[in-house]
Length: 395
Image (cartoon, rainbow, N blue to C red; front, side, top):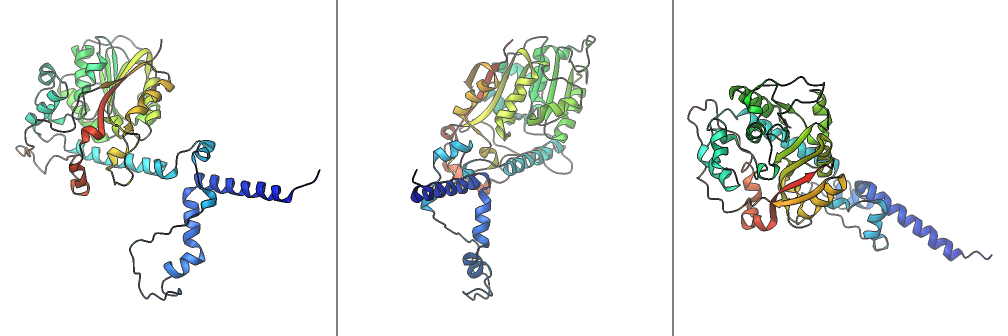
């Protein structure tokens, strides 16, 4: 057969283009570094003193280099071939770890000031407006209620029953774990039955939190509230993305819990799929979850804005149900938490310095408000939606 050199050149050129695209998608920063280190760029622009431009001093804060390559346009087919999204529209592992470190650092500071008295009236008003009842507020009491952290009321969906084992992910300063003690009957302090290694004796509550200082505070408050610690309630430091490691520190087995609740922690989890998968593993067959979290209504945030780290971690509303169903959850429902982000009628926040020696309570929200003033012009209820994710592990 005759060999067509033009066809061979086309095949060779096609292979080169595919190799370049794959290289870029797998290592997006590599080509950037190559361009910046190339002689046409580095000599005149970066080596300013000896370059052809002859600058005596740097003359700019930022350098933008545009390298158009019309022959190697990356389209959706290329992305599908390597199973990736565009590198500029996904969180990298480094960004995820940085977000997790920032979250842990902030909540460590919260836990260290949790013993300082807070605004009871404000906490009560917020909890009422997101679905907590007066009996819930009364049970928590004024010594703990100002430490409420959350975005909704997962108990409405969880419907914890007497005698159940409850897992609270991102237990914070213990408010929802304490309510789980009441609802499961674990607060009656009856002696637990004999239990096998790693299998909790019901009723029982376990709170898991990323911040060691919050775990320390909740342990102290659980004892002061008269609960049987550790027989009926325990708080452990752990990461929902590595839940089995946290359980191993207490010899807990996965597949132990009747119900898992969470109130706001999933907002800040970088890998939602891994987190929901670990919840699934932690539940007994027939167990259920009620995960309250804030979501983004659209597919993604507008990339032209610099968003707070918490919002960059939010999942899109439409993505959650498919994630949970792919893991194996059944009867998945995304329940509108009816928890407004705008227009809450709450008392003006005031520092409650009475009895607080050595400083003020650390606040998560509002610390960097000056960096995100443009958010004041946005309607958060149009941009975001608070939901409670319900799902059941099949028998």
